[in-house]
Length: 102
Image (cartoon, rainbow, N blue to C red; front, side, top):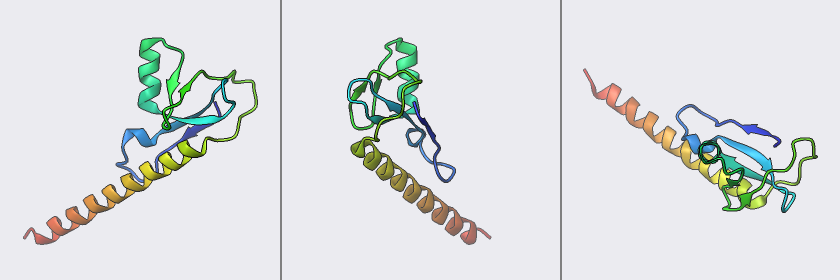
């Protein structure tokens, strides 16, 4: 595993928290959402489902990181953009409501 990527602005959905995990089968780093990590932990499966749908058997943590999966990267960026748009819309609505109250 190479690290955790935190979400941007407050209010983003939990799925924007990802951990990049290198798969021992394809030697690529895949983005795994934090809720998927929790599910795998509770099921004691030892495997994770990445954002791109790949089932990951994690590589040893002493091995070097592999190249990042381009599909996972694209999907992660799309989620972050969607979450930012939703947060911005919510802020605009809140501002309008606050202005309209006497």
